Length: 308
Ligand code: GZL
Image (cartoon, rainbow, N blue to C red; front, side, top):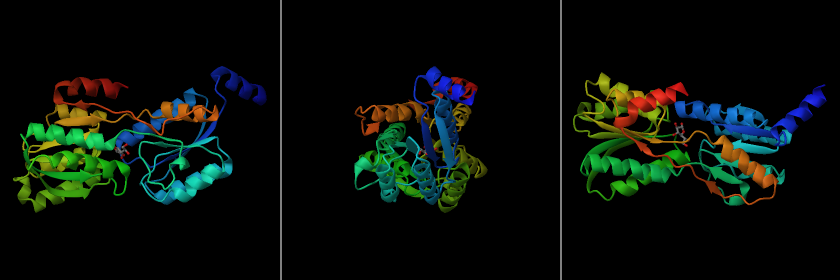
């Protein structure tokens, strides 16, 4: 009966019942949680047996998970790399085992690009440029801002910083007062913002906050309020992810803009593995670029996204 059941499962989905290992970074932000839920749902829909591993933000746990997937002889691996470097050896082991690795959400720096099949991720440099263009426009190119960076060494943090500064350098009166990592978490964003406000005379001379993700912006909003200032008014705030809670804050007037980051990366990732197995060519970077959202649609976006 079990055998029949399994073969029926294969017949019903049409796709072969693949076993895929997914090494996820952790659950540091609302965005990451929705990414995990979306990829698990997509695997279920496709009849894929997904082996899930949460690395609690530690690269060594991701490397252990990849080695375990290789030992299990999975058909493919999804990896959301917490940091850019340190992957060459384990990716070589996956390649030697003929197991395709798809990077989801973040990138890696490796000597040999053939060590992974493709990267399904947004262009973080573009996100940084868009954020800075919005801030420069809103402040007529004159603003002393602070930056809440994402996880140190992550491609998201490195590139969002780079893109923002590519544009800021075009405006001589845009000035970065301070920049520090809040590790993409609400508590990290709050703690770092508290230290910035203390160091900056209570924040009076500050014009804006650029947060590499919404969760740190939400923490910063708390800190700004506790310092007696009005977030979204005394300080302009922009962040990235477009999670439901940022739209709630925007509708309340506490923040001013967010850039959407697509969490639904399972479809393109699984399609890439299917294509590779069918011997079809796969692009090295499958990009999903999100737009910028402003307060005028925030209430509707909050309602729509929190109902999903
Ligand atoms: C970006 C992703 C970032 C999100 C954060 O693709 O890696 O990591 O912007 C998450 O919310 O922590």
